[in-house]
Length: 159
Image (cartoon, rainbow, N blue to C red; front, side, top):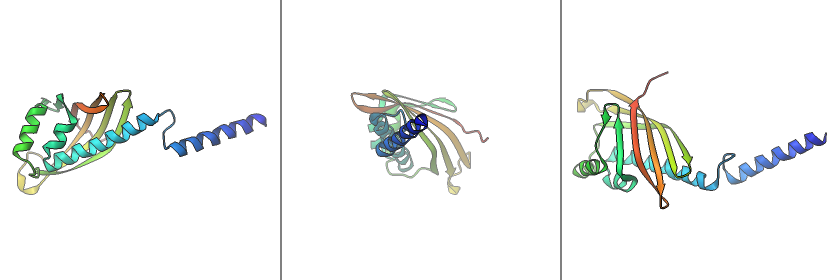
């Protein structure tokens, strides 16, 4: 009986502690706030892509950012920012959604995974109508600031 009462007390304390801190078991307050920050950064980056906003891209990407697409390594931060500045505010020839965003924090490294779905606008004559990509972004925290270091996209396979 004593074992049952102790087990219930531990369970209640655990539930109360998790409910009060809004943290997952084993997650520190720093990890939680870093996770929330990286989720917001991902949302801001996607919005910047959809509105051609070079300022967000320039602020969040590291100078040595690496982008790997399904066709191989592409571009650089400087090239992307220059392209976006030339087309600032222009809407892309597609609409998009970012789905199933998950963020993981491992000390000073953060990993975000998501599915990006782009749909070509009818009048744009793109070589695809709908494109689904599995995305992975790797962030590194240096001097208290998160920077996107690597982006990887690969074709999304329906299961």
